[in-house]
Image 1 (cartoon, rainbow, N blue to C red):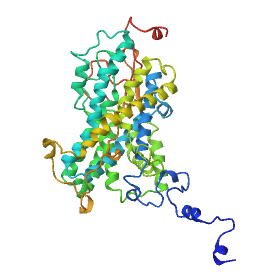
Image 2: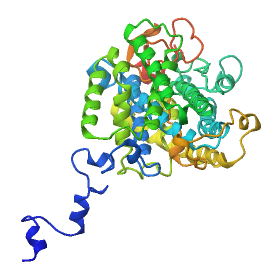
Image 3: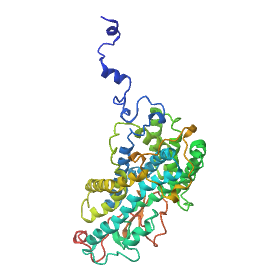
Length: 478
């Protein structure tokens, strides 16, 4: 017997397959969490590969989670299973926070790679605005008339122009701030696409990161960014715990704190260890945070970010969404498409049927949006930025440690924003007329736009209400 064979333990296999497994190569998962991570990585910075990761797949999962959470409100007028189980935030609400956390991580990287703040903002505008504008137009010109026809059995009277019309729906909301949530009295006065309202806060976060990069805080004073993130988190958590609603716009501070936590995770990626004890601790803290509304904002941001980035830096699902980033399209179109399906009677009495149909229809529309709108817009990234934007805060970006900036980020989905904008209700109440109302944070006033008419909540998730005396037979039988 040779020395090599005698050193091998009885029954141990030999050959390259066994050696790969011992050395921990990516396709040899070890333990229950092995498929999520990059084996051998000691820090987040070492584990993160910009072109080979699970983040696109993770964003699709988050977008689908928002859709599923909305289905429970639309079909049953109640919280989703997570909200009912814990009495705290719903799964859709957690998914939206996850979007802001991932966006903070990725958009900060995008700013560090951009040649200037103007170029960075040009790339962000190309990613978020074209799809948003087309969604507004499709809702006003196609989905709105369809809903009107299904509710009234006629297109007569559809408000194309005038106050609260299709025209003003597009014009008033064109700059991302949602000033008009409905067209006429469609959906009983509820929002036609409540998901869009947080895109405004996403854009504000882009601007904030652009300014922080322009003044050099991202590259040379990252501790200041950490301090800003902690300050936003403390204020948002204190307001949520007290329930006093002292903040004029609690959405803005809450989403900014989530976004900044993601930014800090990128800036300190070289110092954040990836290991199973920290993952277990994060999961425990997250479980405690989800147990009640009062504990969610104080405890959730950091452990939720750690868990998502642990899962996102793996490579097992890196091909999912690598060529088509459908998460944005699924998010912005799912709400009105779910309303349309309910009016057609699809999944009217079954959450499961509504979820399956909504995912299929939203996915198909998202594919069309990607190929016809979003991808062509991203192709303009290399074009000259508008003169008014090119000179805005034009200080070049610098990488931490004084390293030179890489070329501007490409048009790949990795540079795309998270499809922010869900209103997954964690707090429910009765609105006038028997409709159930939902706000994104328990006790938080809806403040994404100007005040709604007294007694109304434009972001409520309720099944479409038929016009009195024109209710279809299907609804009249109930």
